[in-house]
Length: 624
Image 1 (cartoon, rainbow, N blue to C red):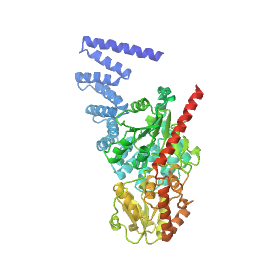
Image 2: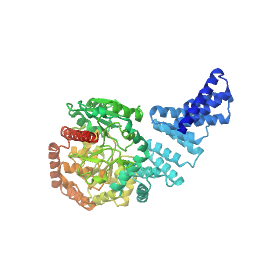
Image 3: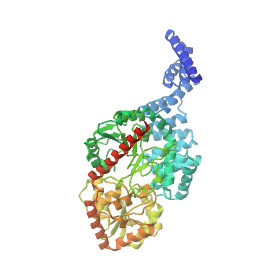
């Protein structure tokens, strides 16, 4: 009550001063009082307009300049949307006109520019901030983030190391450092660094460690990954989730309309997601369901984007909406079930889900793990999974919804004509082991197994994806240390998806990684008739390939341990008849299983939608 009275008194005083200004616009004292009262009321934009006039009158008065810059900083700090980040950029740029040597303003300007996808200018801003204040660990970390986004991975790693030298317990900097070292296959001291992160996850709930980066780190357990996601969710979304009571769902309870399903993603474009869900959406039961896309990513104008736009009942581009505006739109559209296809991946907007614009939320496909809890309650209601991937429901925060197979797939993929083998750098008459997973999924333990396999199959090569120069060089060096000629590692450049799929024909056996399996790349290989050998762990990300293989009834490619994985690889490399029989079995299963049958998948999925919606209605009825 006293706080409200104080605000009312301040507002009354401001009104009095404004009236005085109307009578005498040149009254400097009234200008200053109005500005200060606006600051007290946290009306920084109004305050800034007063302070600008005061600065013009008093010229270079340091107190007036400081006050203006403070207001501009506060205006910049509230940014949560593109429009607000544009305002923040303008505010800090203006503040720097008055205080060009202010490291904090350069730092905040860089943050706004990065959010606006201006990494080149953000890099300059962070560099200037560090020049003015070399001891700011966060500035070194954020510089590393921009360098990472520009593909300067070696410089990014140096930036994270600089940050950690200044502040050894900067949790997110160590997470970034480890993940980028994984991307370039630099494994020096990585076990100790991962163990430090694991310890922080379990002992410091405030540690902001990227759940996505944590998925790929060796030896992390399913329980640790759940805790990491929970720490992250509480750090970023605990306040947002308190606002969900603003949405009223009574209009949905007895609605006779078709059930509306919303799909939220940054990746409705030329992206692996398009080759998983496009035909699923096209095969939706349009007599009973309406599908709504909520896209906040780039419109890349590709055929994949255009096809997705046509597939949904309604396709919404929400990238310029704030999180609250997006949540209100989803609610106004009458969506009953919101499916998040991005999870804790880059550019995700999980905050929209945290606002609870729909009665039911589902975590699926984009993030290979649980999304954790907020204040002891799951961030999402359900997780779409299967019995192979999630045999233990205690490993996830959501209630599992078990599909026959977790991963959806298009029935068709684009495919180019095959180019000659030698154009891929592959020698003739050799056995070709391959792994087209990203380099961050290759761990020291897995690579050691691969090198033992190559040592025992002399007439063989290992065909890997060329992710970056540093990874290629480091893997060649690791091969040499293991006694393997580095020339036996062949690196496949990035090409179109149609060209990439075609070149699978020259591989003989796909060697999977762990703890982060091949996911879309596994279904690509199987669709092309290429056998894939995997060794599952106990985490979600480490069991996806096993799920696919079980679903197409080829369990013999699932190894119980790494010794068996090695022996199976040797067996198929040294027994061409057994390998050919396996390929024939794979071709047959691809034609009859539901793995590449989006119509059957859509039927199973939408049956689950109906069931959970009916369960929700029963629950609501029982509480009335």
